[in-house]
Length: 502
Image (tube, rainbow, N blue to C red; front, side):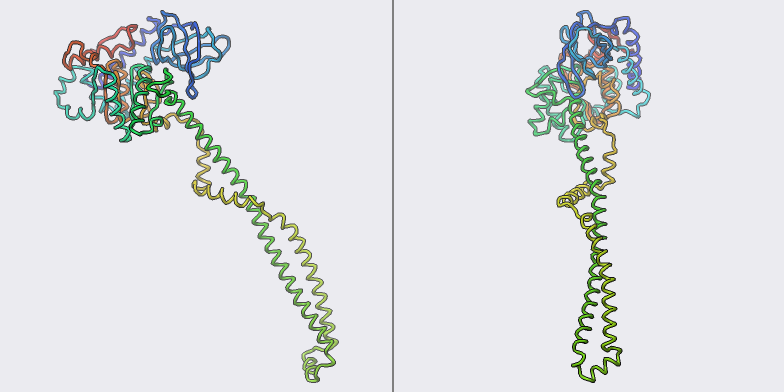
C-alpha cells in the first residue's frame, strides 16, 4: 500500500471510529465529583477533576466544562487520567473549587479533525513533506518492505534512524546525544511521546543532556502542553511550558514596546518644543542684531555731534586757511549747528526703534530659553531614535499587532515536545514544519497519528522504543511491522476495538 493510499485509508478509518463514538458513550456528559486546581502555565490552567470509575475520556480529546449556575462554559483538553481524577487543561479559570462541574468530551470532533488532517495530506501532498514519512511504510505495513526490495536501504539509513533498547535510560541517553547533535546543527526537532507523563519525564532528561552540553536548554526546549509533573530530573517543568514561555516572551515584548512608545512619545513631545524654541532663538538673534545695528548708528551720530561741538568750540582759533576750506565745503558755525540739530533728531528716532527692539528682546528671551535638562534629554532621545532606524521604523514597530503570535513563537523554538494527538488535531501544527521527528515509544503511538506528524518533517525521522514491543517472539522485521500495525491502529487503549487495514 502506497503512502497516499494508507493516509486515505486511515482517514476513512478515523471517520468510522467517529461514527461509533456515541454508541460507546465516549461523548456522554460526566459529572465531576471534585475539582481542584493543580497548576497554571501562562494563560492555561491545569485542574484535576474527580470522575466516576466507569467514565472514559481519551487523552488529548477536547472538552467543554460547564460550571454550575449561569457561569460561562470553559474549553479545554484532557491530558491524562490518574486513578479517579482527570487532568484537564483549560483556557480559563474555573474559579473556586466546586463539585458541580460537568465535563462534555468531544471525542467525535477529535476523530473528525484527525481524519480531515490525514485526508488533506493525501489530497494535497505537495503542501506537506511526505518524503521522510514514506520511510515509515516498511515499519507500519510489513508488506511494504518486500515491495521495496531493499532498493531504498541506503537512502533510508540517512532519513530514518531507529533506536531500540529494552533499557529506557540507555535509550534516552542515545536520544539525548541525537538531540544535542540536532541542536548544534540548528535543526528544528519535533519530539513525540504517546502520553504526557512520558513527555514530562523525557523533557527533564533532555534538559539535563542539553545543560551538560553547555546549550541554553531553557530557550531550546518547549513542552506544548501544561506539564503534568512538577519536576523531572531535577528541573522544574513549568519553565519548559510553551504557553508560559510564550506569554513571558510577549509580556517582555509588550513591556519593551511600552518603553519604546514612551521614548517615541517623549521625542515627539520635545521635537515641536525645541523647534519652537529654536525659531524664537532665531527671532531673538535677529532682533539683537537689529538692536546692535541701531546702537552702532546712534553711536556714529553721537560721534558726529561730538565732532561738531569740538569744531564749533575751536572755530575761532582755527587758522584762516582751514576756516576758508570749511566754508568752501559748506561748513561754518551756522551750518554746523543745523547739522547738530539733524543728528539729534535722527538719534531720537533711532532710540525709539531701539526701545521697540529691546521690548521685543525682553519678550523673546523667556520664549527662547530652553530648560537646562531638556536639550541633553532631547539629544539622547534623538540618538536612540536614530539607532533604532528613525521615526518611520519605530512607527511601524509600534503599529504592529500586539497580539501573541503563536505560529511565529513556535517557529522560533528548536525542540518542541507534544503528543501525536495534539500534533494531528491542533491547527497550529498544520502551519509549521520541522527538520527532525523523534518518536519515543513509537510502537505505542497510533499509526495514523505517527504518519500525520511525519508529514510535517522535512529531513529525518528517528523512532525509538522498547525492543519487547517489536519482537514478542524474537521474530523478523516483518513480525515487528505486523505488531506495530496491530498496536498502532488502536486509537486508545482497550476501550476502542482496533481494526486492521485492508
